[in-house]
Amino acid sequence: MTEINHRRADHPIHSIFLERWSPRAFTGEAVSEEELLALFEAARWAPSASNLQPWRFVYARRGTEHFAKLLSTLDEGNQRWAKNASALVIILSRTHRVTSTGEIRPAYTHAFDTGAAWFALALQTQLAGWHAHAMAGVDRERAIEVLGVPEHYRVEAAVAIGRIADPSTLPDDLRAREKPSQRKPIGEFVFEGDFKGE
Ligand SMILES: Cc1cc2nc3c(=O)[nH]c(=O)nc-3n(C[C@H](O)[C@H](O)[C@H](O)COP(=O)(O)O)c2cc1C
Image 1: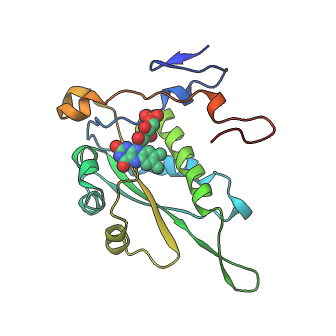
Image 2 (image 1 turned 90 degrees about the vertical axis):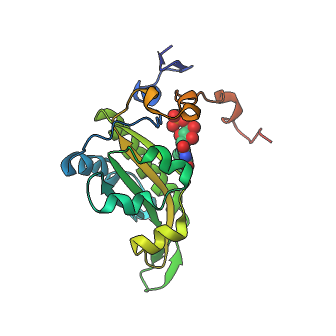
């Protein structure tokens, strides 16, 4: 069965799923606006409940005035390495929808749908020769303030996008963790007929 990045699939799948991983060592080289927009284009075509498309992306390219602002919304542990990304992205989702009668109601699947969009972006990033690394370590209140996020949006996560660099460029503790991770066996999370987990 397919083995890539020391990851072995037990069933036949496309190689992209094993190739994609989340490095922290980035070269810091420039990414063009066009290259970035192509990544968001992939996210655009993600499926969502009622086609509400609740995802929102705020990005900053390295070398622009926006980069330091987005970097400042990340936890210190993430800033240490994400500062070398070519672009940073804050992913938000619209938590509410407007019904046909004009009522504002919670959108039950806003996070689920936005997760689908993030993964479309992650796969397209990999296909384009870059890497994407998601981060939950974000100061959400700060992000809301500095990005000017209105009501009814949730800050979901941040993403660092960059060209992978040699692990030797990382501080010692991060270098030791710089390798593609493994996964639980399918039997631990896939059940036929009824729920068998704890
Ligand atoms: C929603 C989400 C939040 C994450 N938060 C962080 C984070 O704050 N810092 C970090 O270094 N990695 C973070 N990661 C990366 C995960 O640790 C990583 O995706 C996971 O270990 C699987 O490894 P892989 O992406 O290399 O396959 C996050 C990933 C996701 C999807």
